[in-house]
Image 1: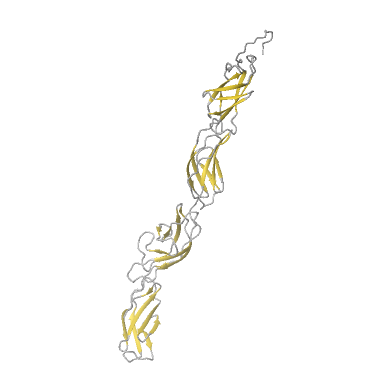
Image 2 (image 1 turned 90 degrees about the vertical axis):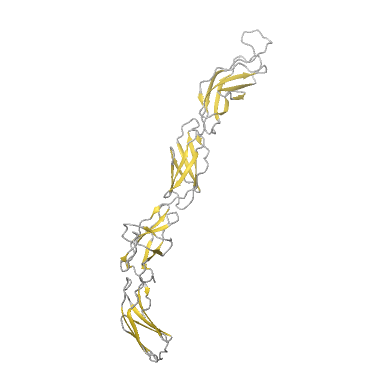
Length: 386
């Protein structure tokens, strides 16, 4: 090509520099640290006498290049959040021409960097997910989103932590976190630890409080309480607490299944035979204590009674009648309901409420006939008084 009014010449040269060079950031959908800027320009007036075969765009900083045959040319692989200027050079068969003037500075923006996951902590149908934000990608992050596995339940926040609601108590969840800016959404973080949303258990349904049967007279009484377990709140029930003073103090029972044996009052003091008690019960899991059950029935702590006192049996070998006389011993804390007079080898059993008790048989007693006499209460049978 020759300039207007010039004399044709066979001289060939490199092209002049392009003009009207400008740069525009194209961030939408661009992966982090793969920024894109589109550079537009006007071809040079003088092509050096040879057809222009292409153009090369060069960045500052980084000297990242891109080539093309016409305007615009896209430069990719730019660092997120970095400010760049660009020059354009034309190319013909002679070589690469002088670079254009630099564009105004433009910042390459992309989607954000993936956050770094922290810790997920379950609560009642919710989880709190912490994280550390990554680089913004050059454009402010508007929101962070946590997504559960399973169920893809989401929660969003402007910063850490994120609360995710609507979870199912008792189900294990992990979470990933993404960041979103005007260019799009980042890759997901690594998965969090697994956490199980849960709350305190449902109060148990109280059953029957009973003195422990067959505790020897003179021993410390214990009690037994039955109950029905209800919902565990999504976490295993680890223990039960009981109160024997209307909820003022609670002690932890041994075991987690009905019935529970209570060895002391909830204050730590021993049960007292003949004293009436009622029990409140709570279920406990890792999240805490349930509310208290309703109160149980009231019943006395007790042991078996003391053996009948001053007992004697009037009988004769070869006879058929035997009479036991006695006085009542200590009741063991529960009213004596009956006395039982028995024999062997002539077997008999006579029950009555007081002394004397008489057996009238048909078969004569042998000389080795023996007799026993017991007191009975709600806790069981005493030792023999004879």
